Length: 259
Image 1 (cartoon, one colour):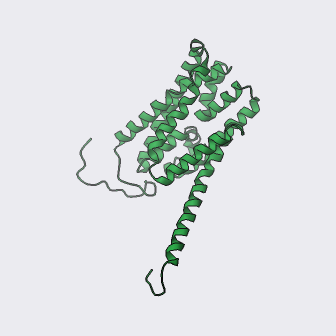
Image 2 (cartoon, helix red, strand yellow):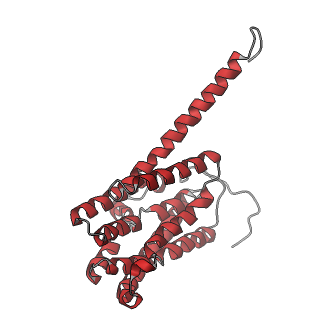
Image 3 (tube, helix red, strand yellow):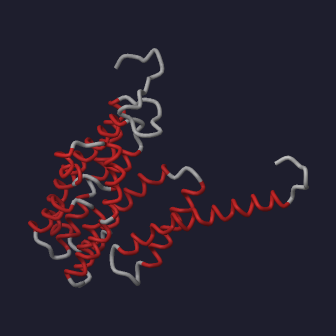
């Protein structure tokens, strides 16, 4: 790639609001491939867990092909393995997957995908593609990041799901391996570097506490949705703290003093 001799010029026509400096396509592809490969390999854990929960090879592969959202898939097979009602398990997985609809609202504006391609792009709207896409400085980079991450992750997730389901019998008792924690662990590793401010860290910590505290008493998927309440709570408390500080500063001034 030729060396740049001048700062890149963003016209703003194809870039998302607040676009920063340009980013080489190769760097975007590299980052997207890293995420796609790292998370895609954890499809093996789902394949093993699903087969160990009693689902057939066809059912396991169909879940990855059609549902394609790891957390919901793990929630479904986990509930079934625990002896839960299939309809309750499906409802929990559905509620957990609702978050992707909110991702889609943001990504639809950012990517501006042609109307004919939106149904296909919607299949790839998940945690990882959203994280990669939102981290890009321009619309072009966002589209590349979304496409490469989605394609890599979808292909690898389904391939490793098949391998995991076929090899489940050789592993024996799948609960001993704790493979159902692989996908959430990978996502947390991707998310952690994005928490740069104190507000973001406090919000993430409160969300974790809410999810863990509600997990034993609510159906699968619901605690994760309610954990989103951490954001407005932290923002409300931060706003109150700022108002109190401003009020104290105002009360400390004397008449005629400049403000």
